Image (tube, rainbow, N blue to C red; front, side):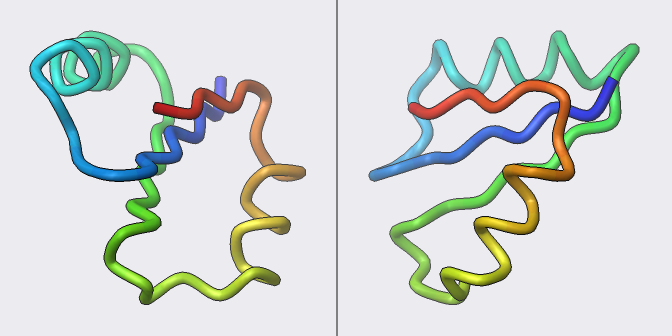
Length: 56
């Protein structure tokens, strides 16, 4: 399963633990919006390419 985690501000302990747990059996991608290095087009493409999207 492809899972996309979108981090709005910064990772906290809960998000870090969930991402770590899911990385064992899923293909993960984490995008941190605070880094400003992600284009809108790339973000939309990643959302539609994922089976599940989690926003923190």
